Length: 438
Ligand SMILES: [Zn+2]
Ligand SMILES: [Zn+2]
Image (cartoon, rainbow, N blue to C red; front, side, top):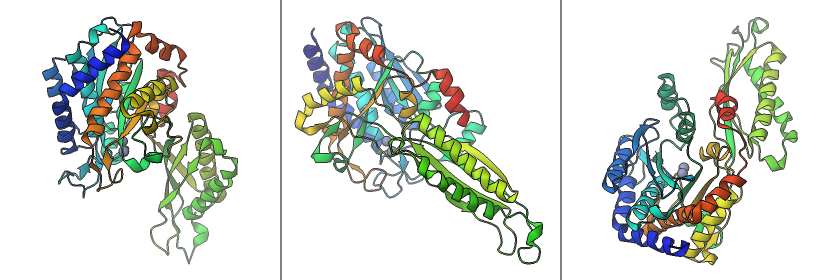
């Protein structure tokens, strides 16, 4: 079978099973769960894999599920991934009444698309014609949320990283994966010119900091000379951060936006415990680490100025997303074939948000395309699924067609993607240099 025929067959199989794929997407939309707690959603996926006769592993990084499907040959392994988790939006129509979780980021559509690819591969007979394996992954905890809960899991030794893809990297679950393709649902207003789909783009990364100034209490009116004023230290620290801003270059998209979360205890006591939280965002790891070092230096200078102490706790962040241009081109062409070239955008430019897909993009080729299909505002209570075809079926087909492109003809395209990819770091470097910030 040639490439066109393979794509027709896999899309026809997805169409034949459209009711099941849509039902899965809708069921998950109505039963949202927060990151590392997605047990019901994971069970649904296991049931789907059982129905499809796929063997799989579950309970990975607490809730992840993974099925490796053998192609006719195993020259390369392409993962199709969907994210399990919801966010908090308690007023949303199908929000969980107890937890407030809602699928207002549309990750339910990612799961439907990933399982949709499974239906396509299973019922088209295409898998045997491919020269590589396909791994279907349901991954936990993309949203950077419920930090206290996840920090507790970390303390209990149940996870090491707060993001699910980070944790999968750490556990070695991506070790035999060569590249990742995935989908994200979007609302029409996020695509310029009324487009229907978009093949990918870059996202900022970030690291977070908790800063604590420790001074010495004393009577603020009677004996301030006996105290050490931590608030003065913090003010100098913030001014010193600002004094570094002229060294940030436009190309790096650095954003540092601190807040004071505690400024003192009582007005007639010299403040001895003052706390600041901040993110340092940027478009490359080197730029983030460079800016982060300057910010730490500046905060410490505030303490030095008045003889206070400054403790800085680095909190886990996500790395910038570098989309793989070869994968992006293939996905773009498939969206064009499904929706018409005039309705598809190639790239969305730099996005201010962050995702742990960035961490993976430093190690292997990844792409995340977006289709419209949702209505309302992302992460808002008014978010809903407006177009099931776009949300679940077009997204399934575009990913399935991209898998065919990669793995047909002796996996020529996949091998080229692999060959031309330049990793930003190795897994070992990642765990050492980025992971140590955790
Ligand atoms: Zn989100
Ligand atoms: Zn999302």
